Length: 358
Image (cartoon, rainbow, N blue to C red; front, side, top):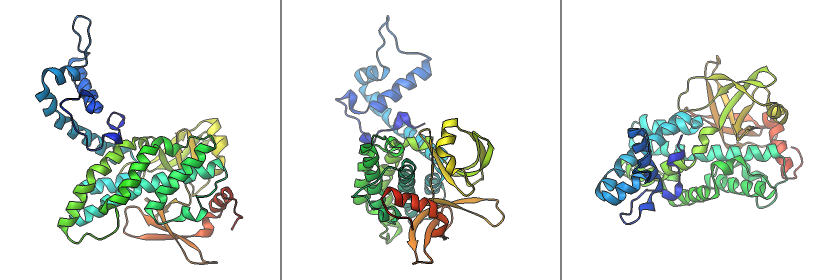
């Protein structure tokens, strides 16, 4: 888990030799190291000072020198958790950013894909809960804004949905994962970092420079979004019994198909029964189960041996041939589905905006 490492307010962690409280997470780490090495707390005739404070006071040079060990272990812990525990779109692109690139230009694209995948997942979660709660939505949020290809607009949508659900007395799942301060930092970074835009790097040198500029920011956002470890994105396959779902799980960077039984409560079964149908993509978050269609879908290969998640990108066509275009995770390709395949979900979303069914 990343809990010991989270805190966007400590982005680009630094020490202050005159202020012990400058980096609380470092002090906690030092205390944990001492406890692990000795099997207990530091105690002097019943007095139990914090080992980190003793080190800060008695040997400031050692206190400062050990900081590099902390930051390295912290970064490795973040990367391991993202690659193995985060929803697969984020994990896949970040793993390739770390381990599967052929050039710095390609690596820059993988960093962008990681960043966009974080926003895609948060946005899909926010929209899914908005539909599930069926609470009326008002200006300034508009129905058409949900089907945007703008990263900035998706961040705005998350903020507006969170605000409106909160005003209705609901603390939405996405707000627990991405508090207001984190979301504000993400919006600021999205506006200020060239590497997050799709302007093309002109050279390997420029790509490398942009990666250097943005890498720490992305890692700190990922650390602060450690709640993403606790959600499950799954494809519904069937039910073993009334409270046991059979699902394909999309977690971590591996593309190996994973199918598991998921035990749910009787209350969850009653509240989310309408989603338990073939072809449904679900998210299990904060004890609730929502349907993720149409923003997240899937595509199987011809013989059903592998499944690729598909992330909504844009709308296509006009009546009677309106389509949704998806990015296929792990493939350099796009996939289109008829809008009619998602009529139920789209009309439910239209309903919360007070619009008639299509």
